[in-house]
Image 1 (cartoon, protein in one colour):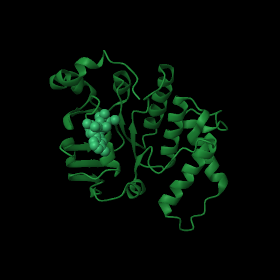
Image 2 (cartoon, rainbow, N blue to C red):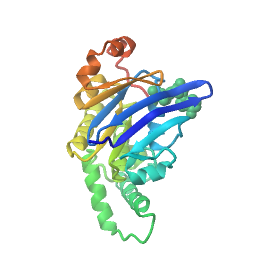
Image 3 (tube, rainbow, N blue to C red):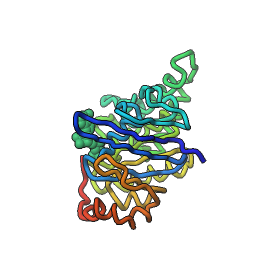
Length: 257
Ligand SMILES: Nc1ncnc2c1ncn2[C@@H]1O[C@H](COP(=O)(O)OP(=O)(O)O)[C@@H](O)[C@H]1O
Ligand SMILES: [Mg+2]
């Protein structure tokens, strides 16, 4: 099957520094691929290039075979490529339910470019409620966003990303800054999204146990280069990966912000 996302020779330089370097990558549809690599490896920059926040110095990004390299982030979202902080913004003084409802509404606007698309308020609310349940925030609908715990905030962000209803989800360290007790719930949320079988998920994470639990495949970035891409077993057994990265990883289970 053709990959849903593909890059060719994807490269970006900041001044003299090559943050992403000639990356050729293919993402099969409806799978979950984790991206690992040390801090500064270029993982977030790679996401920014996929989502359209950044334009590459060289190379191309393809979505379902179509080059999207020159498309804006909004146009990419409309096509089906979603990044959590893109478009949606959490309003700190609104409730969980209101935030998710607004995100559902913004999808309609993005999708139909505000052309008289009639969406009943109750339908928006129903959809928002479903998403809140999916991310395990039920019971917290009326909580004010600014008063959520860190873990709850990440769940809200995921609900708002899901509200955009994109086929591809880019999740950049969804457990960053969380307390250890909050991590299993996020793992459950991602597992549930994966179990719907409808989404293609790219996940940047540091927690190896979580990555091994969720991933169909893992790609390793190192100094902006794609070091390896394969099944979890292939990556764990890969000597280059072990030497470059995995060796020190198990000692480092710290939560990053
Ligand atoms: N907008 C930018 N301008 C200059 N340098 C940047 C910019 N974004 C990222 N970088 C640099 O690119 C490298 C990769 O960063 P990043 O993609 O954030 O790494 P990761 O997410 O893997 O930790 C780092 O050296 C970082 O300092
Ligand atoms: Mg990063």
